Image (cartoon, rainbow, N blue to C red; front, side, top):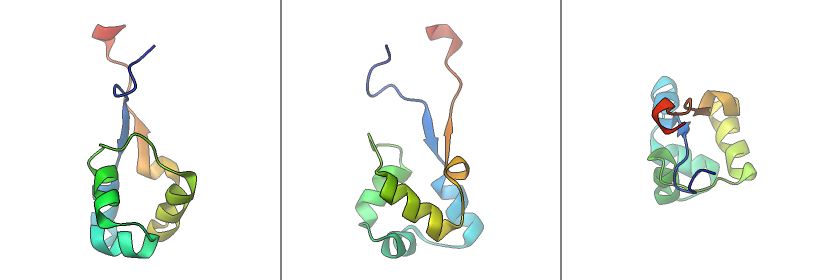
Length: 79
């Protein structure tokens, strides 16, 4: 079983923000969370995300969760 900190989920917030010409601060304001908490998500240091937060981010960015999140394939060396 993988260690809790050993995840392969990637958040593509930078790309989506750039595509929409939006700043992290603007997204945080529109989603209703702090810039610090959004930065933790953006920098992939978060251990979890609430579905309600994910829903609001997707609504503001006009995207689907699959546009925002991907899972890297398993590292073959660790298998």
